[in-house]
Amino acid sequence: MLENLALQQNINFKFGALFSSNGRELLSSGIHEWISVPARGGQDRGHGLHAAVEAAFGRARRAGQDNPILIGAIPFDVREASCLYVPAAYEWREQAAPEAVREHSAAPDLLDQRSLPDEDGFKKAVEHAIVNFRHSDVRKAVLSVVRELRFADAMDVGRLLASLRAQNSQGYLFRIPLPDEGELVGVSPELLVRKQGDRIVSNPLAGSAKRQRDPEVDRAAAEGLERSAKDQYEHQLVIESIEAILAPHCTELDVPSRPSLMSTAAMWHLSTRIEGALKDPDMTALQLACIIHPTPAVCGFPTESAHKLIRYVEPFERGLFTGLVGWCDAQGNGEWAITIRCGIARHDTLRLFAGAGIVEASNPASEWDEVQAKLGTMLSACGLAA
Image (cartoon, rainbow, N blue to C red; front, side, top):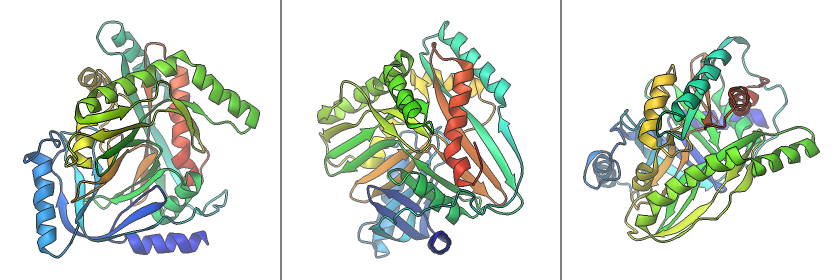
């Protein structure tokens, strides 16, 4: 059954993309127009990315599309080129049911792997950030790692996607073709923003704990996360920032006073679901995403200072990791998830990404353990132990 699903997905994705959420999935085929304009200032009507998307939608309408759609990904650094496109055709359909996946999926043989930075380098970066907190206005910085895997043959991305769906059927599943023949694939648990009419939802996550096999130990881990002053502080920085950004654009905004618990197969997360109504219903999902991104959940606080610290201590460019992935139609409706629990497949290599929020109370060893646990989602989908 899994083989049939993977084959079907490979056929569907030969010239298209997928974004799946809320029991339905968006499938695209063909490319009507690529849009690589950076997202910086994308909230400004008539300029930059907004103008490029509106112009592309106009050309798609003239080509016969009633309600053109935009799908793709935006990098962590909004000054970099976007990876967005208006497809030649698309359809919405009911989300495929998750399939049972064998414990050892038929991935190619793993030839080698490396982490950038390695364990020692990551811990030193955490220490550097903590020292920086004591001598600057930065209160949080998100630091990340890359795990690069090289296989004996190309990864079957259709099978990888089926395994991710089985692990987290409630997540935001995505597969986006990239201009350099690579594919961005993953299943994000975190919604940056969804817009339907004048209603919006944002569901940021910050503060995490690894799931445990023993139910009692697992429940204790969840309860410990809820009690953790460090994680509650980290989470509150994110919520306060998003609330401050959204409030001026809303006639109403409901922000719960305390986070709840959200779980995936690999992690517990502190989660806050924010809902509101827009003052201007014509504001698009993409504009909202450009206003909010990057949040302290993926960058830090304050944003600009944390971004400078990240560029200084991280030994690689994040690219699409911790950016945005999703869609927006010509009516302005859409949804954008945070690009986490993901990888980039290209020929015989798979680059996986994971990050952790660092605050002054962080422990370097614990933060290393956290990023390794977060890598577990993609590693498990490859049939590999974390």
